[in-house]
Length: 82
Length: 242
Length: 111
Image (cartoon, rainbow over all chains, first blue to last red):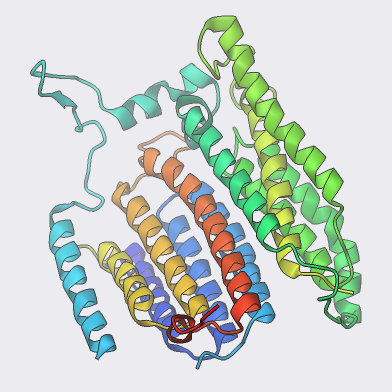
């Protein structure tokens, strides 16, 4: 097992666990924060797969702007899912 | 009952996808081995598409970043379609979030740390975004992440000063001029050589800033347009505040 | 033996499908759409990887990674965020008109 395999397996497990957390919480703002963590780990995985253009694009659009838009929409409606 | 049925359907889809992807090799491919077999004329070409882009890309377009050469020069028409989709989404969000004058919302003042930090950092973030899209043909990046970084600097100003409004007229003017530049460059290529989006400026030497023909001008136009549109989306979704 | 990158991205797609089918809040359904989008992009880029190769920028010699999936995914990420913005503004419009966001109660609203 070389270094590429070990780092990839750890990052993939963190990504799948935070996606399951984002799908199951009742507080919608915590679900949006878990979505932001998942986008950040996917951006690091794009960099490990030798694709720097896609990594910069996913980090700036998925982790910053997408999370901000969801939180603005939650502020205009309800916060707790019934 | 509904959750159990949904879980069974999800596990079935997982098994079908995993069986389909068990035969796809990961990482041990040689990019010179994909040959194209034409079943009508029954002949096999001696070159594959990724190998042709990797070997001939620097001589055909003049840029050292191969992903930029594919996005702007070899498949430039798809980029024009994608810019159109972003424009339609921004117009739709602006039309749906229109509200009358009596539904405003009270806001409080922000923290002193956030205000001072936003005043110091605003210019540097715009400078960094402009660096990303001007050097699109030399370093990784390009027009789309450069525009997103410029929109995040405006998002920082919205969070620090809650009564801030970007003016709609200036955003509209900059977005329309940038889109018009892209289409006019394509039409100039049609007039000069007969192809839409033909690369008609001189190539120069590779790894210099003024090289690769018409690619830096197109990426500058795309960066300004994407930044203005994402700023318009953020401004419309903040709502009306007093 | 299937590679672990493929297993991880197919798991993300299946979690997204489960959230869209069985949840009742509109904003939770839109979060599930975003998870599915991210899974598809990761699957596309991990198909084009070559071992011991470097990024496709030609100032270092050597074998390069496949550049075509990266160009397609660059477009797909920007279109994903614009579709999500349009869907969230439709959800805000529904809340302003009827006052609820669960799809059970939306079926019983009479104009």
